[in-house]
Length: 284
Image (tube, rainbow, N blue to C red; front, side):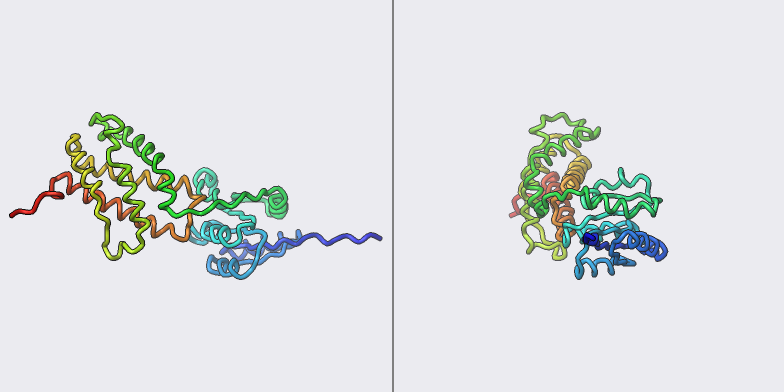
């Protein structure tokens, strides 16, 4: 009589705030040989992620907040990057509406699904999953510096689609003007942690002042100058969205706040240059 090795028991962290769903899914997975640890909320899940090792994470998206499942997935990705991560959602359009989450989750499971097939699905994913090489994480400043050329191109394309801004006929070089220097100043601000929003600090930007003066000479109105700045902010955030997989999420929020504050500061200085307040000699 030959001895056979017992099947490998994979450990699953199951996260769902619905007790009935947790019990049903736990029973289904355990019947197929999985070792299941259940959590009822994000706090419990994060505590387990930091204290135990898991092969699989299966989490509901809404518990009750839309970002709850994403928070659990992100924590698992950073702390236990080799774990298979599965996100459960009841929204039929989730695959088209949540591209950002796909960068963190290995698979999205749409409700309703056949409970009896759940364990087979998890098992198949464990067998076929290919571990990607971990992407080096970057600060926002590094991403913006690396993508400066693309930011300028994207910004220019957005500006050309603006009916209001397109009324002023300019060459691409005239249109971009001081934009690369404004981005450089923003990167300097992001890399200057001693300048905080709470303290109301800012970096003086001669380029922003010159930008305002240039726009006035080119025939921009003050409203167009504001639109110019708004498009820059949209473009910057769009660049970050395209690079979510490389972002260091632990520092993302303060960096995003700094971007908004610095772009606003640059607009203020540009407006001063536009109306001729900045750079004027003091009265004798």
